[in-house]
Each structure stands twice: as structure tokens, then as C-alpha cells.
Image 1 (tube, rainbow, N blue to C red):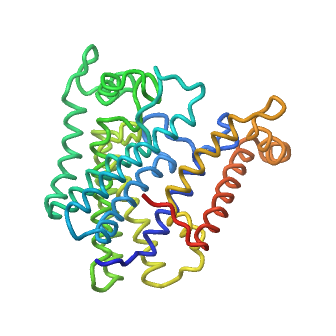
Image 2: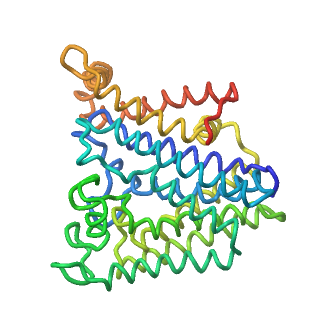
Amino acid sequence: MGNQRLESLDVFRGLTIAAMILVSTPGSWDAVYAPLNHAAWNGWTPTDLVFPFLLFAMGAAVPFALARRRGTHRRVRHHVIRRALILFAIGLVLNAIETSPLSPATFRIPGVLQRIAVVFAIVAVLTERTTWRTQVAVAIGALLGYWALMARVPVPGVGVGVLTPEGNLAGYVDRAIFGHHLSNPLGDPEGLLSTIPAVATALAGVFAGDWLSQPGETGRRTIVLCAAGVVAVAIGLAWDRAFPINKNLWTSSFAIFSAGLAAIVLAAAHWVLDVKGWRAWAMPLHAFGRNPLAGYAGSVALDAALTRWTMQDASIKGAIYQYAFASWITPLAGAEAASFAYALAYVAFWGGVLGVMYRRRMFVGI
């Protein structure tokens, strides 16, 4: 595999980072543009696909990242452990930055980067130490095993197979292990048990990255990946009848459904960028994709700072939103449009920052 890069993978990852910033920083949480909201429980919205797309992209990049460090198992193992620990620590720091007031008794432990850290460590070990057949078996076992747990293990005081916010097994496990250190009193969307099917999401990315990196006719590989994605989407939709698509629980149907859609989007990007060579349009997304940690962590930290810092009894973010967006967009198109415009502007700002970093060859890696 060497040191090759897939242009499409960088752009695909960049698309997910830009989307994460977009859905995480509306001008006002009281007026969120509807497609940028998560599904209340069962079902899905475009926003629900952003995190699984990122895990899929991370999985697809793992073989390339390990190939650059391959030589001894010790070197790879050191990189995997170090990267996972740093990602987890940065996630905790971001939780602290976003929490106001910060209380040790309720400080959230799970989070986006924490899940990425755990999944990365598991997937990296599997990729380095096992065959693809073993990895396929692990992915299938994770999906079926999680389904069995959620459907067959009784929750004390509730019963078996209850998938409500209050009665599901994943939430019960989170409360038992983390106590009050969760995003909400009932559980956490990045909780412990639901990390099991998230591993399968990332492994699907590993399979896609391996497939596209093989020598041979690239156009055929693109078509096969797209077809595999369509099959996965169909399986997810069929499974939804027995185990509903649910991002909060990261149900097995959601994991395979979102991985299928990710495969279709990656295949389309591969066809356009790596097969046809049409790349000029994708430069802004490429900048996001080459600096994903700087883009995500930096955007979260800055948004928290703008929200917390005040100026004349109003937050800086509130003042910017009101005077630059809401004051004139709301009368014309409504509050949701104003909130969406702020989010787009914030993404564009970070596109400019990461674009400058890209041109100066400044990449934040761990």
C-alpha cells in the first residue's frame, strides 16, 4: 500500500468535518434549520449520518496510517496507544470547555473524540493483527451481538427488549457505569455499549479503503463499492422493522444503513476525483480533510468561547448572530434561515483557516 493517498478519502473526510461543524454551531439552538436537527429517537435525518460517516472515513484511513508506520509491531502499537489516549484526552478537554458551569459531579465522560479513540484502537489492532475474514466476522458479530443484547437482556425494573429512552439496555449500562457523567440523565449517544456496533461502522470503512487501494481497474472497483453500499442500505432498511434505525442507540440497522450510504458517497467521490481526475472544485473540502482534528476541535473550542464570553451583558456569539444575521435575515426568511446562515458562515470561516494552514503545509496530527 505504501504511502499512497486517496484524494477521494481526504475529500470525503473533509465533507464530514465541515458537516460536523455545520450541525454543531447554529446561530441559535432555539431556531435550528430542520434537516440540521437529529431525529428525536427512531428514524434518521441527514445530521444523524455525519458521525457514522466520520467513523467510516477513520476506518478507511487506518490501513494507510498503519502502513506508514509499519516495521515492527512495537512501533505500530506505540502509535495506536498514543493516538487513542491523546484523542480521548482532547475529548475530555472539549467536554470541559463546553460545560458551564463545570461540576466534577456531573462532568461528561463519553464524547465524540472519546468514541473515535476507542474505536480507532480496536480497529487498528484488528487491522494490524488479523485477516480480513476475521475482521468481517468481528463486524458481523458486533452487529448481531449488539442486537441480541438489546433484544434479549432484561433491564431491571423494565423488562426485555424495551427500546425507549428510559428503558433501553444501553442507557441502563451507561447509568450503571458512568453515573451522572453523561450527556443526559438517561444515557449518552456516545455511551459504552453502543460503541460495539460503532466498531462495525469503522470496519466497513476499513473494507472500503482496502478495496479502493488495491491495484487494478479503478472504475470497476468504484462500481462494486457503490453496489455494496446499496446492498448495505437495503439490509439496514429491512432490519429497521425489527431493530429500528436509531442514532442515539447506534442500533445495528443504523450502523449498516449509515455505512452503506457512506460507501455510496465515497464511491461517488472516488469516481469523480480518483478516476476522472476532476479535483479543482474539491480544494476547500480537501483542506478540511487534511486537518480534521484542528477543524473539529478548534471549531468546538472557539464556539464555546464565543458563547461564554460576554460583551455588554450578551455573549459575543449572540451579538454577532443578532447584528450580522438575525437582524435582517429573520424578517425576510425567518429565524431558522438566520440560524442556518450563521452556521454556514462559521463553516466558511474555518474553511478559510484550514485553507491557510493547508497552503502553508501546517497539519495537526497525533
